[in-house]
Image (tube, rainbow, N blue to C red):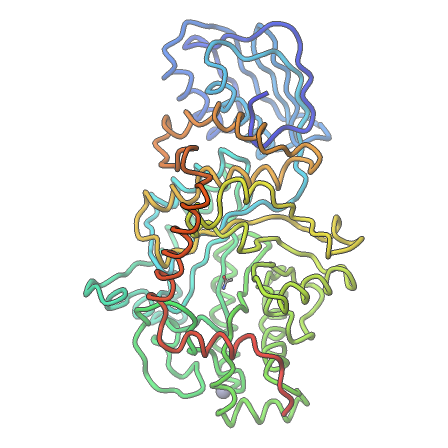
Length: 514
Ligand code: ACM
Ligand code: ZN
C-alpha cells in the first residue's frame, strides 16, 4: 500500500474504492474534513461512496476499512482521526483510479516525531510557518520544534522584557548584504499558530536557547552577559561568545520573568532550553562567575553550565514543563535526570556522553544526529537514502536503547536558507524518511520500497504547492556529493564569525579543573 510512513498492519482484500466528486466526507475534525474535501473536489472524477470518520475506543492510533462502498475510520482522539485522514489523502493521490480495499491498523513506533524550524537566522512569517505545518502534517509529524531565540534574532513578543522583541528581533544586515532583517511573532500570532498546528495533530515546542546563543537577547539587555558591554544583534553566523553571565543573580531573576511569560504562551508540556555550543571564555574572566564556582564547589566551567542549567530547568518544572536540552548539556555530568537530551553532535565526546547517559542511566533521548537528520545540509551531503537508512536506536545505547529513544527530529537551520522555496526543497522529501523512521517498525524499513511509495505520493506536493527536491536529485552521484560537500564547507566557513573556531574549542573543551 503506497502510504508514508508505512502503516503497521495492512490486510489487502478484493476490490477497490473508486472515489469522486460525489463522495461524501463525514469527519468531526474540521481540518481533516477540509483537507479531504479539497482533494476530492479537485479530482473531477465521477465516483460516489462515503468516507466516514468517527471517534471510538480503539487501541491503535487509528483503524480503517476500505471497501468498494467507501472508507470508514475510527480513532480514540482527534489527532488519530487526522492521521487517518492523511493516510486517505495519500491514497487518493497514489491510486487515482481506485484505492485497493484493505483493513489498516496503524500506530507510531515513537511518541515524538518532530521537525525543527529555525526562525532566528532567517525569519519566516505566519503564512509560511502554517504552510510548513501543513507539509509536516502530511507525514504524521506531531511536534514542531520552534527555534525562537538565537544570536541573530529573538522572535517572540515578551511584554515583561519588551526590548527582547523591540531590539532583539532586528539586525542591521546579514553577512554584509546591507539589508535590515527583522521579524517576531506577536502573542496573537503564536496563539493562532498553536491552534492551527493543534488542529493538525501537531504541538509546538518553543526553544529559548540558554546560556549560549544569546547574542540578540544580550543586544537588548547587555546586563545579561559578563562584560555588560552593549553590542549589536550579530550579523554573521558560527559560534558566538555572547553568553549569559551565570554568576549574577539578576540573570536568574530575568530568566524567571521571561520563562514564566513564555511558558504560559505555549500549552505544550515540553520546553526546549538549548544548552548547545557554550564558549566558556567570558566566565573565565568574570569575578561573579568565578565566585559562584567557589561558593558552590564547582570544579570546572562545564559544571558551572550544569549548575546554571539545573536552575533554569527547575524554573520550567515549576511552570509545569519537561525540559529538552542539546547534548552538550551532558558534559557537566550534573544535569537532572528529568531532562530529555537531544542528540545532534558529531564527535566522539558528544556521542560517548549520550551513549553513556542512555546505557547507564536510562536517559530519554531525541535522536537528531546531524550527519543524518540536519536537512539544512544539501542533498549531496545528506542524501535521501542516508537519512532513510539511519536507525535511530543506536547499538551504542545498549539494552536501554529501545526504551530510551523518545523520538526523532530533523532540523531546518536557516543560516543559509533565506527563502521559502529552498526551505521546502531542503525539507522534502527527506522529512518523509524521518517520518517513517519515527513511525514504522525498524524491521519494515526498506529503501527501495520507500522510494517506490514516495514516487506514488509525490503528486501530493504539486497539488498542495509544496516545493520539493525531485527524486532524481535526492541521491547525487559520488561526484555530485564531493562537489556539494566542498561547496557547503566553503559556505559555512564564509558565514562564520572570525572567532567561531576558537569558540567551538571553548564550548567543547575537556573540562579544566580550577
Ligand atoms: C546545534 O546544532 N547547535 C544544536
Ligand atoms: Zn559572569
